[in-house]
Length: 234
Image 1: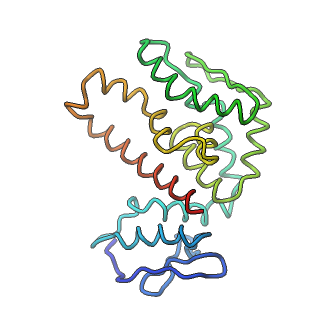
Image 2 (image 1 turned 30 degrees about the vertical axis):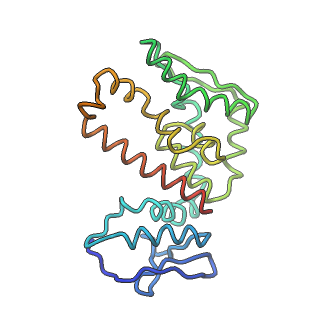
Image 3 (image 1 turned 135 degrees about the vertical axis):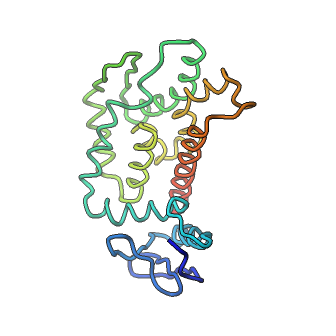
């Protein structure tokens, strides 16, 4: 879409802070006025709109996309968003490990064990890990405690939870991220541990990564960094 506005601004409104283009409020695809719960978040979204040049690229506006998801999807049908998030506990990335080679096993432990240690301390339940392909069934107590934490979470932190969980394949990382126990970089290390291992084997620091891998990492980093900035601005 071609850029059609000159001035981006924000203003206080009844529902929070509104982003405006040439004095008119931005609207979500459903027609809801795009608003943020804090002035700092509205400023982040406004900065994305202001950074657009001749063409508008939605993928370059992750904070705006997070706000749209919250207003158009989560606020209108939260239960439908919670179910798939909770389902990640049995397939959590952190619980599925390689059995060899030893170097990869060590990398996975370094990148993924801290998240599991945090979970056990936070919820009082240890999550088993496996080297096999069969899906685990995590302890019922873990499911109950996680469900309570997720369903009681306010809208905007839950919005970040569902984003990080879906992006990383880990509900544990999503919960730790929302509670400030891990960072965007921690999530990236846990998510791309196998790719980092291969990069060392094939000296990709010198030769460069495959374009598809680079694009995937860049996209994940953009969204995780935006999620981190979003939480800070709440």
